[in-house]
Length: 447
Figure 1 (cartoon, helix red, strand yellow):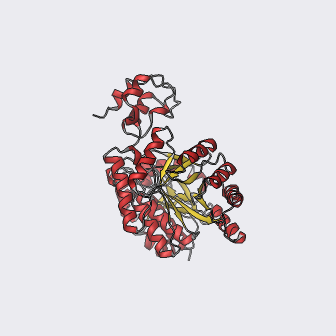
Figure 2 (tube, rainbow, N blue to C red):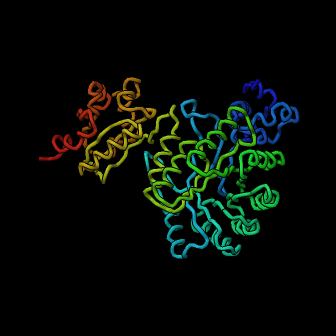
């Protein structure tokens, strides 16, 4: 039977030293109980608790951290379906380069990866990793490209070669980057584990079938090396879908530790539609790290949008920071609008104001990420709360206008808002954001 957080806390040292990353031993115990932390994070764990908990305290899918600052995290999942709780660490997306590609193409691709950035619902989305594949047969060429890729992008790499010596050379060239070596086989695993440990990298393992893959991953785990990714060999989209599902199910439901690791998948098909479909399969079905065959900005935007939708916590609305946002280039006489901090609402309203050609101030108070009607019904978007927020951010000193536009769906708060903001006039805007442009031209544009 699984132990509760309180039961685990009684076995911890109780010093609240924070060295484990949690503020208290109780908080750390709760993470252990929820399989969101490993006992090894506690430097003062007694032999008794190690014996009692042991591997049972680890997440069913172990977290692997990549990058010199360990910001990119793979694995750590505890549920099969996001509605059960949530998915935690998004499928990482990368772009492949071959060491036989023309130098100009390599430079162009690296610059594109380095500079790629897309902002969506308040989040900045970037390419997570760069993969470097050896096709030249030269360890020196392979290592040189690895070094160049890391120095240009400052992103963790996935180094792919069938030659252990070439992998060793590239691993040394980017030592400290916390990258991935791909991939160790039953024949090369012993050699490559040493290379990975010496240079601080993770190691992907592969084998002809799942039995051999389980044996290899289990062997490394038993030996104490846990920075492992699984790279199963599959030959169709259907097989990849089935294998991904099987790996996750065995790890979560059967506590099969050998498969308790994030996966690595190279998408080999260079056809844009086929490669997109393969990547969608990885994002939708438990993929840990997915490498695309080439850089394509439109493809990345599509995949990152899908990924954002799937990995959004269903119990926590996406929200923007509560503050006053300038739309366009507003001045002290520009109109003032107000809406909630639900991301979708904010971006729709700000977009419609911008499309009207009007510069304005958009007041976004704290509404816990709720939409307009939901926030109003919950008492989070009232005349009193909006007035309090306007005063707290100093808007009255920032603007000369004394008119504020509220959403039409909450017209009933206008009187309360005018009471809270003496000297202000409340204008009731349209119910739908799509009607803002006509409202602005009819009501706010000088004749």
